[in-house]
Image (cartoon, rainbow, N blue to C red; front, side):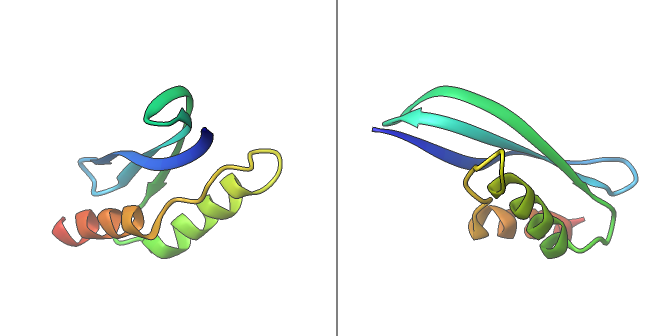
Length: 85
């Protein structure tokens, strides 16, 4: 069965504390990825992760993208990285 899936693929912290996030927008057949594209966002040092990821989710779930939103678990991972730095 073919489905869409969204996952945080990479979280990177730059020298100045900016968190860069790469999000995989995938089309999967079972466990096989048959297509993907990337979406990226950045959160300034000390920035509001919830607000930024709400904006990302609003963007990727609307027309014409119609992708799945970033999960609460993936957002929690980003917040954990921010807390660690």
